[in-house]
Amino acid sequence: MARKTGLGDNLPWIIDTTKKVRPGPKPTRTTEVKKSSTSGVRKSRDSEVPKFKTFEVKLSTLLREDQLNFLEKLTRDIMASRDSNNKRERITKNSVIRTYIDALKNLDIYINNIPDEETLLQRIKEGLANL
Image (cartoon, rainbow, N blue to C red; front, side, top):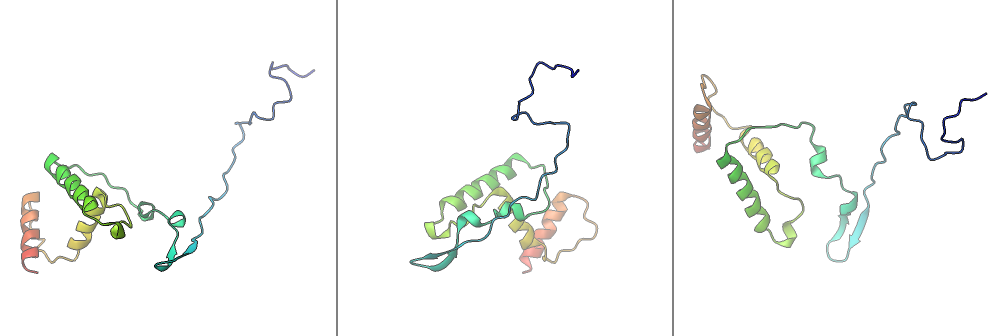
């Protein structure tokens, strides 16, 4: 005789959670091309991958209050000063930090014997002055 559980036998909406189900591959979006009456061919916004999903590494950093305020003000000012033709992507604090890194990565600075952040800042300023 089968053991009674009190739930009944015909419960198709209850899923057995003891079996591990491997999810299938995530569906990928295809890029649709739409023809615009004014600008020719353009990509559809619905089919583009957001830029932040193209980055591989997440980094947390500690900032001073004045540094955070600077980043917030700069991003607000950039976003507010754009006209409708230049609103392709959102400019964030992360955008500013990434572009600063890209701008400075090929800067020729004297890297020997840098004891602290203040000296590093001074060397970066000297490198920028020599451009």
